[in-house]
Structure formats: structure tokens, C-alpha cells
Amino acid sequence: MQKSYRVGIVGATGMVGQRFVTLLDGHPLFTPVALLASARSAGKRYEDAVGDKWAMSVPLPAYAKDMTVLDAEADAASLVGKVDFVFCAVNMKKDAIRALEERYAKLEIPVVSNNSAHRFTPDVPMIIPEINADHLAVIDAQKERLGTKRGFIAVKSNCSLQSYVPLLHPLKRFGIKCAAVTTYQAISGAGKTFETMPEIVDNVIPYIGGEEEKSEQEPLKIWGSVQGGVIKNAEGPAITAQCLRVPVSDGHTAAVFVSFEKKPSKEEILKAWQTFGGEPQALCLPSAPKQFIHYFEEDDRPQAKLDRMTENGMAVCAGRLREDILFDYKFIGLSHNTLRGAAGGAVLLAELLAAKNYI
Ligand SMILES: NC(=O)c1ccc[n+]([C@@H]2O[C@H](COP(=O)([O-])OP(=O)(O)OC[C@H]3O[C@@H](n4cnc5c(N)ncnc54)[C@H](OP(=O)(O)O)[C@@H]3O)[C@@H](O)[C@H]2O)c1
Image 1 (cartoon, protein in one colour):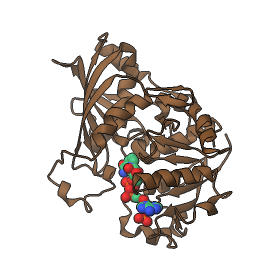
Image 2 (spheres, protein in one colour):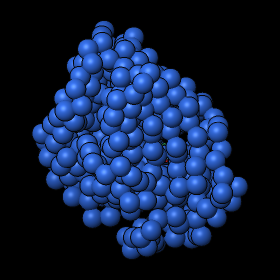
Image 3 (cartoon, helix red, strand yellow):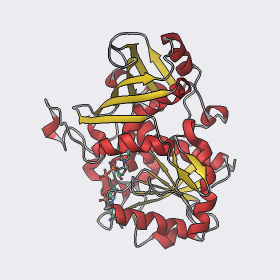
């Protein structure tokens, strides 16, 4: 692995961008050298551009305060030769995001993206590093399509998935027939705080646009395989999802029901979770949790407020595993949506890309 990579953060003033700015403060491999946002923020000191939108629980890092924010669209070409890759988390129309990310890739600047725009582009890998690191192999075909030598796009999955797909994945060996999931999603997932989303106080909102489709379909790409330069989606297992917005600042909870071809014992499920790890653990990547899945024995855990920061917000928590009267089992999952589910998951993906010499 190279010692240090120069990094741009596109969307640096947003909720996920602020997480990147915080997570990369003192990161052992990645040094932020460019912060980019919309034309509204361009030309301002980062601290002024963020203003009272700073939503992290830690102060704005000293290194970033005086950096001048660049225009993500107009200043893209000025990054050539100055950054080794960019993280991207922007709030724009899908078509505009698709075009922006391709533009960076064609400038030979790899893009590690939190956006959904390219998640279903067949030669763009959508990675949960512990689960489908092998999908990085499709990047060669993508570069060929884009006509690039080092530019490409790699994306992470939607934040809702992180609270249940890592828990279902190690159970696939028992033949998952189907799963039903309800997610209870934090307001930071909408880029909001309690100040900017007062309507959520004392409330539950039973609709998050597009979220149920993503929660049902993205796992099938993650469980797919690389064939002939594209990722072919898996045909199953089928997942049905309902996604609710709840008055929680950070941390998505999932209530999961699952049935198997060959019903395992409770002990077999707990052992599959306990022993599950992937490339990030094998490669000792800097942001990898040592133990990916943490099971809580207490009846009232995991709780978003108490447990979302397990292993710096990069682990997935589980609890309340028990037999069900309709399905085989039910359990609860939890993951931090802007750490493991967004910026932290993207940093881990970039560490994997660096370890595998893609960037
Ligand atoms: N929040 C989460 O938990 C989460 C999880 C997974 C994925 N995501 C995805 O990450 C992305 C960002 O989400 P967010 O919650 O961070 O949104 P956000 O807080 O609204 O931030 C949006 C960012 O996009 C920038 N932007 C807006 N229009 C732009 C333009 N025309 N050109 C360049 N930059 C522009 C904004 O810059 P200005 O400040 O200058 O307007 C800001 O930096 C979205 O695609 C979202 O779906 C979010």
C-alpha cells in the first residue's frame, strides 16, 4: 500500500461530507487536499461555507477551516494531478450526479461514491467490503467502457441495508428462503437534524421515498457475481421491506424475519455471526472493525443511542434472536447510518481499493 493518498471530498459541506472531513482528520493513508461543493459555497472558507450547518458532535477539524471550497462542477479539471481520488456525496438530480461522477472518472480521478445514481450501472461495483470485495474485478471492464487508464467509479450501498444484509449474509449457507424487514431510520439519513426536521419530534413517518425499492433490490446486486464484464444480480433470496423514519439522530435499526431451506439452530446462527469476517479484517484495513458483528444477549439491546458507536460506528449490532411462529427466526439489527452506512463505509471501501492497487 502507498503511504499517503491525496483526496478530494465532493459534497464536503453536506451531512455525509462533514463526516468525511471528520473521519479523514489524521487518517493514516488519506489526506484531504480539496473540498468541493456547489457554486453557492465555492470561493468561501470551509468554515464559512458550512456555517451553522455543522452537525457533527466533534468540532470542525482545524485542517479544514481555512481551506477554500471549490466548485465541484466548474473546478473539476483543476484537480487533475492534485488528487489521487475523490469521495463523492452530493445532493443533486440523479442524471446530474451520474454525469458528474463520469466526468471525474474520465479525468482519470477515481470516484468512491455514496450516491445512488450509479448503483445499478452493471459495470460499477456496489461494495460492502466484508461481503463482496470480489466484485472489484468488474472495474477493468468499466475502465474499458469509459476509455480510462485509472479513472473509475465504485459505490457503496444504501445505508438501510447495512443494518440487515451483513446479518443475513453469513446465514446464506443455510439457504435463506425469504426475509421480511422493517427499518427504523435515523433523521441524519435524510441529511437532517432535530433543528432542521422539527416534524419528526414525537412522530414516526411511514414513508421514505425510494427507500423500500433500494432495500429490496440492492442486496441482489451485492449477492450477484461478475460475469462477462458486468455484475449479474442474484435471483434471491427475496426480501420485502418497509422503511420508517423515526425520531433518532443517528443509527438505523432493522426488525428482521427470516426463513430457511434448512433451518439452523440458534447456536449455529450465533456462531455464523461470531466468526464472520472478510477482506477488511484479513487485510487489517485501518477503518475495519475487529469484530464485524456484535451480538447482544440483553433483551433490550442493541439500542441506537447506546450501541451505534460500537467499534467507532463501523460494526453491525444484533440482538433478540429467537424463533418465530410464521418465519423460522426473528432478530434485531443496528448500524450507524452515516458511519458504516455512509462516509465510514466509503472510507473502508477506499482502503480496500488502495490495498488492492486500484487507486
Ligand atoms: N445522510 C446519509 O446517511 C446518507 C447515507 C448514504 C448515502 N447518502 C447519500 O449521500 C449524498 C449526500 O447526502 P447528504 O445527506 O450529505 O446531503 P446534504 O447534507 O444535503 O449535502 C449535499 C451536498 O451536495 C452539495 N451540492 C448540492 N448541489 C450541488 C451541485 N449542483 N454541485 C455540487 N455540489 C452540490 C451541497 O453543497 P452546498 O452546501 O454548496 O449546497 C452539499 O455539500 C446523497 O446522494 C445521499 O443519498 C446519504
